[in-house]
Length: 338
Image (cartoon, rainbow, N blue to C red; front, side, top):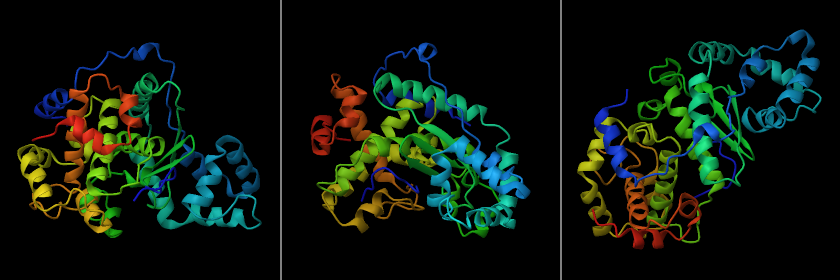
């Protein structure tokens, strides 16, 4: 179910109050004293600003400024091969000058004239990350346009934002591309920080797939959500999970019924990938629950299990939780009984 390392992956007061009640008391992190600053590197602007009449010189500038992201972008994201190949410049110009791609970049420039708000959220998030995990690396963050191929990419020490996948819920391009409404609902700028943090956590805290069943996947996904929430505690669950406010309310009302359904139908220890994806994969709703449920509703249950675990086991720190790969142990010590 899991692949290591590379992924080619307003605020309601009531919801905020609920969020503040779901986590145990947290230490006050001295953000001002932590020397970390995240600024999204605008690779997209430099790429689409190159002069076609001096392409070789421009490519060398990009390599110097953006390596190793530049090579990863060319080979892994838009698939035109290495910058060292003979016909590379022609392929790159074809990509930049493609009518759809160039129009998309204009839309990106309109929506993302600057990234100051994202920079600030990510700066504080990775200050918290450094506080909890002082020995872990802090990634460099790059912005790119890929022709709608990728939302977030993850590689060693790199996070990338596909800006064209975050143009807004009502972006005219998404229906034309056949992107379902339940997916485009989360394709807006405010979703970027939580998507990036979840992706980074996947790369840093690998899934233990020795027993790849629904329960283990639920709890692992719950850990990712708990981590994301702790890194950006000011953001509501609805934004972090990508649910509507009504879907969050549905999860709260039906927590015990969802858990009972999984137990009654003996689904928790099911190892079939189809069944696992049915409960934790993106979908308009979760099959097996009602049509009012959000897709990935079982991930919310996993988050609740992890939250109970942390509330009942005060000696566990964030680093202990994220490095704990015995998911059955987490369930047992959570004493989860909604």
